[in-house]
Length: 326
Image (cartoon, rainbow, N blue to C red; front, top):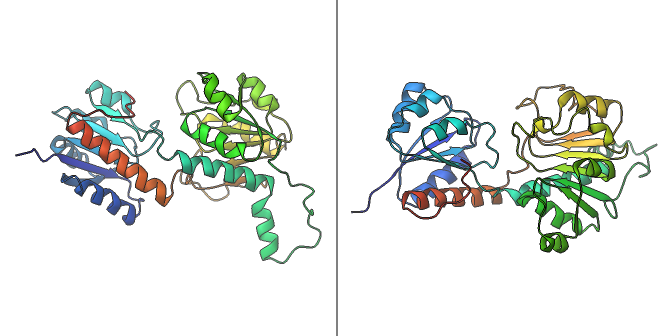
């Protein structure tokens, strides 16, 4: 008889029940034994559950107590439904020979679309004009004198992975001039296909009308944009961050925006999440913010859950896995 594997589902309490049901139902499709817990489950219970499991599905990947990991007796497999893994203790898992995989940027379409949404919203001052329309305050508005097109502007993409490439694909439809910087330059074929030009980091910051960040947070990328280089940006430029807040030095970003050294910023990621009312950066009038929702759409959830559960199944059955990060 074929072995029935034990799968532990770990989730944050804030995750809606509808999404949790999608995960459970997809796991049931593979006839797994399923147990679940939250990150707030007691350590004693966590130890028992981790020891019971053949694989753990984290939705999303957050820090877990190393003591709980240390009690795992069998070689396990950890699958994160998130793309970023900076909040997950990968190093502790590696010490126990636990394989960790992320979602391989399966949310790339949603994140790319959201980045472009923020670009358009800032260029057209969407929030401001929504408010004056609702309030009936049309008199003395700018008549569009402070609004801008995307057409023929220079877009600088930092990080040309799946998300960055999708942003390039979308923005090519606006006939933008697209430059990029990445630790690895892409092939001539890809550059030609998307009409991309590779430049240095500083050149990108100097020349771009819009800068958008699509890199993972690590020790090397912490404060990637900082007090030394943020002043390279044009006064007319806008900055988009849908990756991780800490890629940009907080005080440098605040001062730059407050003093109107750049035109604005679109932020889906924050230095404190959930955000607090009257946050110093989020309260500025040249900032548009969203609640870390860029990668979250119905379509994304379906795609991520199906691919992550399939990855678990493949590991447990000796098949090839994807998106290993350790």
